[in-house]
Each structure stands twice: as structure tokens, then as C-alpha cells.
Amino acid sequence: MASLVQITTTGTLIGLGSALGFVLATPKSTVRRSPETRALFREIRQLDIAILGTASLQYGVAVTGVWNLELERLRYLDWIITTPLLLKTVHTLAQSVGYAGTFKTALVGAIVMVTAGYLARFVDRTQRRLWWAVGMLALLVVLVEVYRWCEFLKARGVRLGALPWFFYVGWSLYGINFLNPDPASRSVLFNVLDFINKAVYSLVLQTVTRRTATVVARQQQQQQLF
Image 1 (cartoon, rainbow, N blue to C red):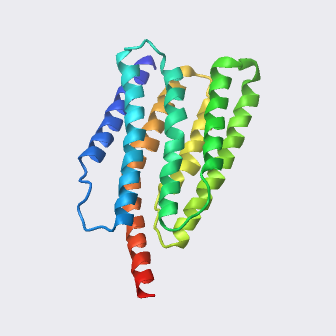
Image 2: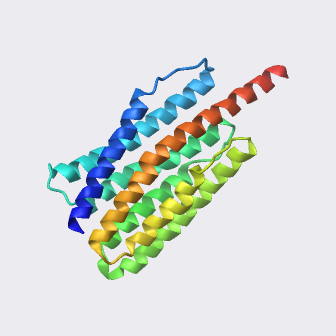
């Protein structure tokens, strides 16, 4: 199983690096866009680069052993940064079509969720179940916010496809896998989940961003008519 951990860790690094390369290689402007749609593409691109870059760095450190940090601890350094950024991608999409709600609730929920997981794993193991429950409660708060954003987007005519399910299912599986008593299989599953919820999510995000930009352009045309 140890070799499988190494294989999936390296594979996830390659997948994340490839996704990052794809985002960086994608032209910033391939079609005629309004200032609003250009701003949307720019912000989503910046968030995507930050997410994939942070995750790639974490896995790169794990594979090379350059700082002699164990993978389990490195994950939480990654997650405390990338979890809010992943949420911000959906909030940004919703904002672009008129959503006026705050991001603060999701941000606080994400920080509490990751912090509770770290405390349960490394600091207060005697209260592991309690901290796990705190983290799952924070996850529930976060998912409610994601649901609101996604429903707002759908009400404006944006086709989201599989995007919400990366959060509803993908993120829930992190919490379930946390309870896995076997460190090796737990690490393998976390590697797979990171690949899906970051590298694969990035591809879906690009598609949904284009669909959202189409809706933004349509809204602008309607406003000009009136």
C-alpha cells in the first residue's frame, strides 16, 4: 500500500501540473468580450491558477521530500488556502449574474472546517470525534452557501452540469475518508479526491465560466434594449 501512496501522490502531482499548464496555456482572450465578461474570465483564471499552483506545490514538496514534511500535514496547509479559493470560484460566477450575497459565511465555514480537521488529526486526538463533528457541521454550512449560489446561477439560466456535485459529493467524501483508520488507504483516497476536486474541477469550471459569460452578455443586451 505504501507504493500505491507514492504512485497516487506522483500521479496527482502530474494531473494537477497538467491542469495548471492547460490553464496557463489558454489564451486570455479568444473572442470579443465586454469589460464585464473579461473581468469574469480574468478573476476565474486567477483563482484557478492559485488553486492548482498551491496544490501542485504541496504535492511537489511531498514527492521530492525537499522540506521533509509529511504528506498528512502538508494537506492541511494546502486545504486552508485552496478550500476558500474553490468556494470563491462559485461565488464569483454567481456575482457576475447579479448575486449580492456575502462570501463571509462560506469563508468562515471553510476555515473552521479545515482547522477542526487539523486539530482532530494532530493536536487533540482524545477529542477526535468531537472535532470531526465540528468540521462536518462547518461543511454543512458551506454546502448550504454553495447551494444558494448554484440555485441563483441556475435561475439566471446558467447550465452548471456536474459543478455543484464536486462540492456536495466530493467534499463530503473528504469527511467520510477522515474516519478511515488505515493511514495508507486514507492517503490514497485523499490523493484521488484532490485530483478530482481540483484538476478535474478546473476543466468543468472553464466550461461553466463560458456559459456564465454567455448569460452575462445576454443580460447586457437586454439592459441596452431598455
